[in-house]
Image 1 (cartoon, chains in turn cyan, brown):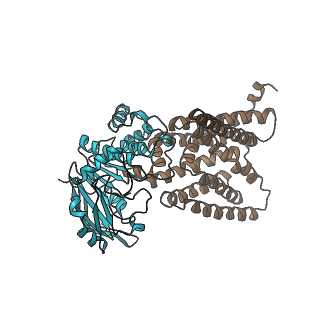
Image 2 (cartoon, each protein chain N blue to C red):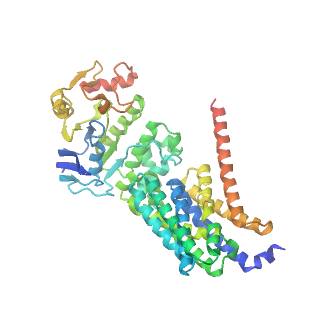
Image 3 (tube, helix red, strand yellow):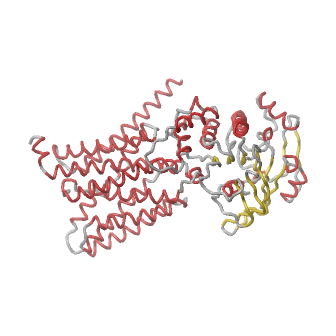
Length: 283
Length: 276
């Protein structure tokens, strides 16, 4: 049984078709990157998988059944917001809320503190878990958010733009952590991103959404000139750099990379350890 | 006049009981008002309550009946709209305006002297009857009991609605529940400090507490303690020195907030010096 399976799925919001004919499956321990231009419906895909957005056609099954809210087998990290109400709370408090979930009442759970501590240890966040979250860097913040989402050791982890706004070193840290969580828990991971390059070393599948269409497959089957040209409806060129990164040429830049940090910077000289990471892309 | 003599008066006793119940409920709910950034909604519900009280007076009912109906109704509207809409403030503002318009109409239709509406606006703590005390204590206890039961999911949905929704905490249900709690708290707070000064108990102690500590449980308990302190001391000053109780309570609550902000700034400046 696949962890996640979509069959001819479509989502319509306000009578506008966001995407349709989405068919793919995600197996245990697999990492899939969800890519595509802004507004293509990448976050909507995650929201459909957790049952927050209904399908207008087709089916989505999570562990063989229709998705429902509050499934402890599903962990979810929302896109971090600019004005963050979490600011004064400590990471440990926030991870504790993930453990409590919808529980109402006065009963004190003895296992709580231990399980929260374990989630912090797994994500390497123990050293800054007791600091207010507004004092943390973007990467630390994101790692606390992953601890929050993995406190139940979910079998399906959904991450919405975990690399947005992070510098290259922090991106590499978060990517390492996603890989670690996958290895330790065997969870399937669906991660929305702007750029495949930082994720490339750990990605097994790519889900590319553009112009209402969804393509899924192995990275090389999707991220090639023929498939992307067909998806975007005009010629796309892919250049492989010496360090093994893919530079995609011909996307509408304004539309495809609206985030200041989402670009592939050709002239940038990344840290040495990152260069090693990127070298693995083409192997 | 000695303290024992003063405490022997039933109106003083009633005032102490009422102010204690109100301060505890307002401190706890106020913490979530600040956390959820719904100060405008808290402000609006108080004023909407005024229209309800005016309507009740016009119909010859107890003002508290109108307060309850209008505050709970407004809480329901704002709660339903606020969970999903980004323009929450517009919904609050329009609801507020509509209710205040009704309030003006009710007062103009009422031929008698609107003494009851005056006390709704500014509070009348020393005029609290034993019946009022029971009502205030009962409503406050219900609010505190509910907050203590739903504390964790309410905290979760208040700081991170999206993740909470995925974990099975419905933002819509909690938005409506919270606005209901806020409406009840507003109704009881109005009895003490009045519509215009309801912020003194609902927002000022919570904002002070939030500026002093980031830990949620600690901040909520601190907000309750600060609300209690400013109410008790305010009441004492009003009796010993004179002047309206609601003036003293608002003055103390505001001074507390000012102090917390100054402490925060001094702390930050000190931190920068150390870092430099």
